[in-house]
Image (tube, rainbow over all chains, first blue to last red; front, side):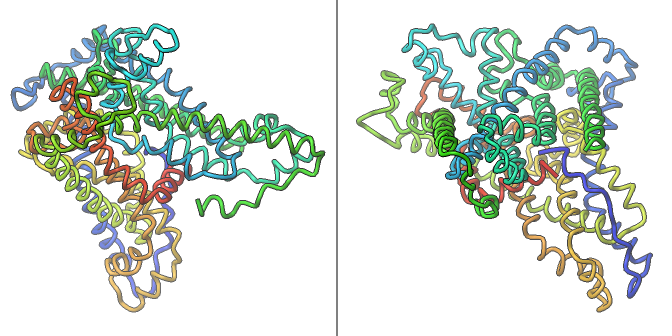
Length: 310
Length: 293
């Protein structure tokens, strides 16, 4: 859920009869106030305070900011290999999960669209995991991945393949987390694709079928090109969501083994709440935030260009 | 379901040769089987959790991967509800999510109405400020927010989770676009009759925007019920934990007593699965609308 519904403020010209401009202003600001107070206190305020913190030696164990630190937190973070490796884990996770979650969701949606019956069933099956809390998902997959008696490992040995050490080896842990994430979140993209598919006029397929185009050709030449904007949207939402990964890694591996799956949010968490270095952790947050802003800006530009073409 | 399928004319049989018709049928059968395989794969984790949770603990230890037992039991559930804080966590999660949903609807619908209808001076600037807020993920604010709540002595209270979930720009935009779609005459008529702006909002507009209310309420509830990072930071006392935070401690509490671990995860998943089953169409349409517009 994010970043998407962006209607422009198209306030209709205020009604003149029986009302005055001053009254409109007062009522408008009055209705706006509860939101604005919370918004300033809980979003704008913390952001400003976070920036200030990042230039200080603040620590959780003592109150206040404990002195000006200049850019030292930033330069330390930029030189820290732990910071960069946690950034890399977040990016790697995004690189693995995004293509899988976009392509599989598209395939599932196109297949479900072709089948006339049971649409509610597919939606139920693929979307239901999405509403399960991450902590419950992690418990279930911890059991499926268990080295002793885990279902996945047993299946593999049954067909004669040595089961990997799903969560215990640095080379497999990231893949196992990605696999769980695909199971957990694909429903969201699936539903977005289904909605996109209903916008494609039926007649196009009928005309193509009359011309003798096979279902495969129809999918490649009609469905996929017409879903281009939907795909762009889903890809961007997915990238932004994957870049915010924390739950799955924290719950399934606690960032291990040997920090090989620690995402940047967990690094910030560790620095701020385990090592009590709020100032430094705030600086790391800001660097991460800048990264997210850059990604969003790229999306904005691409989206603009697409809209112009259309 | 209704909304998506009704408008669909039945697929016309292609006028071409019977060959292409048969090819189409084979292709659809192929699609169907592929989907069934994937659906089975997607169902296995949940079914497996349910299955494990209903077997006796000893059975799970001896035959971990067997789907069958001759002694089905709800012992694991009973022992969890009796011995752990699960019931308390349920209550905490429920109160927090319900409060978040209710307050978000009230506060954000008022803001949405003000922006969409009153045309107050400065409304352009305010909506710009809200748009900028879409770019700020809560995750980068955890340190200053924690300092703020610690300063206000609100850690380990429900408010620590409820308050940050209220000012959501997306919710305001949902209400705004809904209010924008209602006819102007509604406002004019009421204002001529001397109704105050607040009355117009509360008595005329709110009753007309039930779909927006339910979408925002359901989403806030689900999101709040499932959030982990922030509740993990601010709820350190076991009695105040929410379901996700509590579940995060379950593995270490039960270790390899997997029937119990799975029973807790089933209990954790159950409420929202029920909510989803009840409101399937609403939720799915909500995702599609907020995602695509």
